[in-house]
Image 1 (cartoon, rainbow, N blue to C red):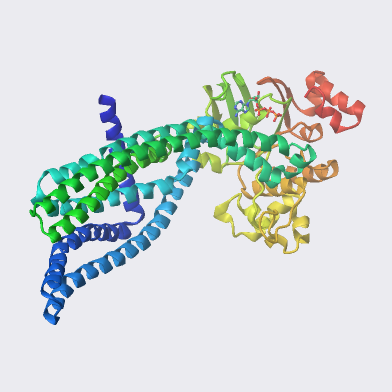
Image 2: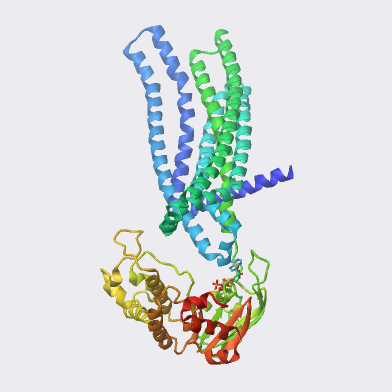
Length: 612
Ligand SMILES: Nc1ncnc2c1ncn2[C@@H]1O[C@H](COP(=O)(O)OP(=O)(O)OP(=O)(O)O)[C@@H](O)[C@H]1O
């Protein structure tokens, strides 16, 4: 009982929140729509209450013969009924139009809320399956559901008004008639609530399955996968996974549909039986001469329509229940709170860090994996230096970047910038100080210029700076050779797009990172897609660009690492060697051994397969 009350309370609160959401999205239309619904609600009863007048006038005319006076008597009630019907049609068309306008506004409003929340939550949330489930559930018809909820609430309002007016019309014939009307719809209501609940539970249970379907579909239809899918001939594998999963979901869905159909049929039979009983009683009253033909017509219409309205009302309640359950997913998503937040009184971020970035006794494990990636980790990166971090796959190099950007916070220990814990800065301010070239940078399908400008949207119109960044990354000449230079659309997704090679995209991303003009430059494998000639050319430019800034370069390439002021060798979450290139060679440790491998092999490929 308590749990039922609690769930009714949740539904009511979802309903209120949805109404306030719709209200915020489109006040004016909501108001007009409600007035229309109210007036529409009164029309059926108004029309029915005119029925005895029209029918009795008709009976009178048939009895007394057709004359101008008698026809005039009929014309008035019939004309009024026709007028009401016309107004009803007009209002319903207007309501339909308003509903469409509202659905556009509410849809955009909710999409905006979801997008805003998607970028507000922590980066780390995207690594959780549950988060992705929540996002997916919130997205799935969130706007459709809120409007459906609004519609059922509006339907409830309109039908409620009609029912009250209808009950007033029926009451003179006995209280039991409106009562029996309501009772006849109870089975349908129960079936509706029960089936909606089952449907909702099924939908919650299969969210991950449906995300699998989206993933298989993405693999089969996305251009990024097209080459590999063809070469490895793996399409059939994914298609069959898709089909098998879809078959299971379809069977479950059809079974639910079958149960719903049976349930509705049984409920309809019960309602029909009750309506039959009322009809028999009505016929008897007529035979006994208690009712006139006008009463009979009114009674018949009011009872049949009333029954439909009660059913609609219960249907509206069922819909409200169902959509509230689903809309709860949207509210669940919107209430996710980021954990990486600003402190109450942020310390101002230094415009130009003077001392160092220090990792002090940092221990960190990813939320989805209990094993510590870093344990009591210590590292000092002096300001104004180029620091290289080399290490084997999985050593924890990229994790350092994520911690430095505060995508995650350490489990224990601290990361400090000029002696201040990063958690004491405003997150946004701290990130403004940093620019990163990620291991897999984003290729934006927009113009070449815009691709670079996205590094700093506040300075996006500065063409000279854009070109300077492109020159520093070595992509300027290539851009000039494109059909429209910096205005050339890149990527093949949209019309007139030109594609770049992997290395060129990487240089473009590098230009974007440079355009940011941040004091701390972090580059994760900046030259992985560059040929050795391009790499040498690029290195020289980078040295001058990073001259008075702090640069952290993560790399497997020793030709790049050896240019750094300090090289840190990382293994299994620890720094195992540090020093300049020559110092490390003299140390004769892991770095020196890998370096010798390169000398012997005479190729950098060997190095990537060597110890580091
Ligand atoms: N999002 C994540 N969730 C759980 N574990 C992760 C996650 N990202 C990385 N790891 C784990 O953390 C460890 C360090 O990963 P990291 O990406 O920092 O290594 P790396 O040194 O940058 O490797 P590579 O040279 O291959 O890029 C690895 O064992 C990896 O499996």
